[in-house]
Amino acid sequence: MKALTWHGKSDIRCESIPDPEIQDSRDAIIKVTACAICGSDLHIFDGVIPDMHSGDVMGHETMGEVVEVGKDNTKLKVGDRVVVPFTISCGECYFCRRGFYSACERSNPDHEKARKFWGNSPAGLFGYSHLLGGYAGGQAEYLRIPYADVGPIKVPDTLTDDQALFLSDIFPTGYMGAEFCDIQPGDTIAIWGCGPVGQMAIRSAFLLGAERVIAIDTVPERLALARDGGAETLDFRDVDIYDAIMEKTKGRGADACIDAVGTEADTMSSFYAAVDRVKVATFMGTDRPHVLRQAIHCCRNFGTVSVIGVYGGFLDKIPFGSAINRGLTFRMAQTPVQRYMPKLLEHIERGDIDPSFVITHHGSLEDGPELYKTFRDKKDGCIKVVLKP
Image: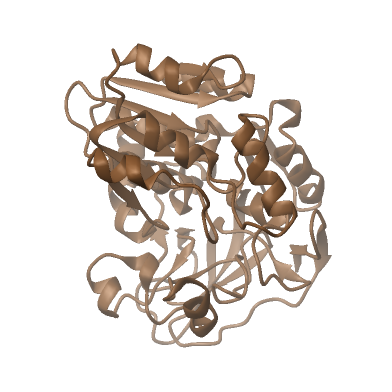
């Protein structure tokens, strides 16, 4: 089959590799009908995520048609059309039983590596390094799904692939980020990052009852799309974000702040963001947490900071004194996607939201390497790429 494979920083190739095979009786194999390039994939493309191996198959936003099912999988049958969550979860361990699927204790065969790095291991993820299982990703013609009787959700024929695909990751992630904010009537939510996850967080905040959303970015197309979703926008290259948010909230700060950027904050956003970049380049740091610092300062007393952008290691110069003295609550997670999929599928079916609004580019797997560059460099108005194998 054809697949997009990783061969080093900025080196993604479309190659022919062996087809996947059933390895466990609960497995399923799908023929991929749509997959997407995620902002998290760009961290791999930029060489930020450790323990990638040459030839690893990329991608964790995937859907398709079931073509083979393990003998003990009674949930799926050949011909079912499914969306696959990016988190791989057994459904039976301590965390899965409590709905914390992204903390599954069984699905990461490399859990000892992750334990040494993070103190404990999260779930295995598709296409996201050998810290998280080394599983082949879904930017391919076929995908093997472990624990396929727990993860995939069947999609009605009334929805297109473009409408359903983002149940795999960015819609649940954006929704979770808004849900973490415990939104009350009249609340103002500030969201850093108007990429695909940030766009989903904007719409989700309004779905959950926010009165105002302030969205922060600098890319004109992203800011325009945020305004289309009802947000007020701030360009961090034009204004001081702290001063602007304080002015908009009469000096109080936002009721909750969502960091939908993570480790690769724009180095031109502030002097300290540039310092972060130098530290990473000289191996004096692992992440660039400028957005998280700013979100903490811009949050009102006893407000919530929701972190859904990806961080990998140790964050420097975090203003924890501000957080503790002002009573902030922090919520964060890799999204337990299975927990959200049924509810969000209902939202799509009812017409409350059509997640396909974020798509700007379609292509084939052969187009994938070039579209990675287009997405990373924000060329041609690119906000979200969907590939059709």
